[in-house]
Image (cartoon, rainbow, N blue to C red):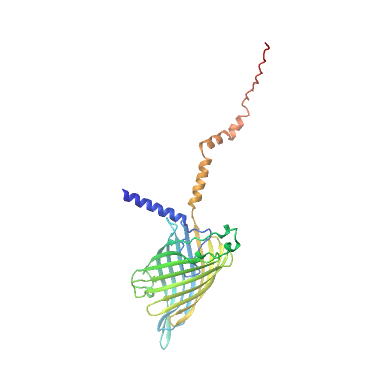
Length: 338
């Protein structure tokens, strides 16, 4: 019995703790157009879709290669019962150009799924910053840099790569993927996201990778990014250097575009993307709901309900025909003179 109570209290603690450090934001918080992933979740009751239409084109360097790909990828993100826990799924469908280069160069098209990954991330540490606006005694302290901004928020990621893919993208079986996600908000308009992944574990195509993305906000609607992604594979190293723009069209809708320089072993080329991020916002602020419920309960108290009934239309109407009670004034008694 004590063990059940202990487990229940621990679960309630987690729920309360996660609600304190909620990850929900008033406007959409998308990972696009970058390849990196923020450690923060979208928040409970939010269903977010991040899409990207892309074209990748490289030179034909090895004997057998995939020099060109045109496709569409979709990332779905949501949270259920914990603000700090996010579930996501990413699907990529593309048309590849398969090339064979020897004395003559030949190629043929191949279409299908290239990636299907289901994962989850959990925020381990959320960095809090000082509120400089409350400092009124010293201008220097108010505008001084908060050294806590060097310490990043940290999240862990775990996922599974399914193998229901096109033949040229199959790895042989389902494989796990693990990662560490970091974010440093160096200012209100500049942040740094760093990811470290170990992917396709247990297959011949395993890889290590890191991504560093710097995002700069020009205004409330416009932002840009600069990104470096390096992937270490068994036989070659791939490099991806990118930049792009994002425009906040609506608090639940973001448009973005990106352009990248890529190297895959000896092959070199470019990657271009155009994307849309949209969220269905069903988030509820439990604190506000609690306060509004308290206010409504006060409004609907027994006394207030009685007063409402007394002051309704019919009571006011019939009160006109009621006889008013006459007030009788008592005369003061005269004092007798002895």
